[in-house]
Amino acid sequence: KKTYAQAAESAVSKPGVSKPAQNPEKTEKNTAHASIHRKVEKKMQKEKNFQISRNRRLILKVSNQDILQRNKLNSNLIFRIRNEINQQFFSQLMTDIEVQKPVIASIELSFFENSIILTTMPEFSAEYLIQNENL
Image (tube, rainbow, N blue to C red; front, top):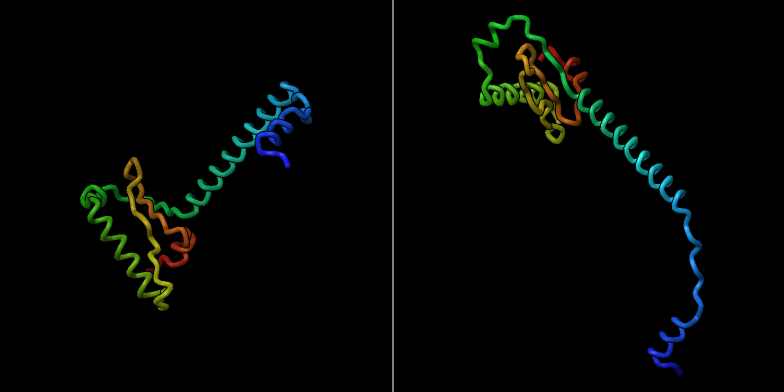
């Protein structure tokens, strides 16, 4: 029987199967192709996420700017409005206790303060808000 050292020595001394030399030009092309492929996939995923986010937003144009000026929407007021809207959905549409989830995730003013943006939770869409606008 061979000892561990002898087995290791004989394995090292045997000519191993050498790996064929890779063509550096081919490797660079493969790397570049993979990099471009990753960038395209990342861009497609970003576009998909943007589209999903866009489908969850309902933008309400404010025709009378004085309303916004008089009722400066602070964070507490926005929070209260969001909760009241969600409560309306709970009481009017969602009678099953297990299904009671918030519909509105956030309410915010647009940058120029001429619109109010309602963003739904991921389970809902802006279309759902439009269908139930009577609440």
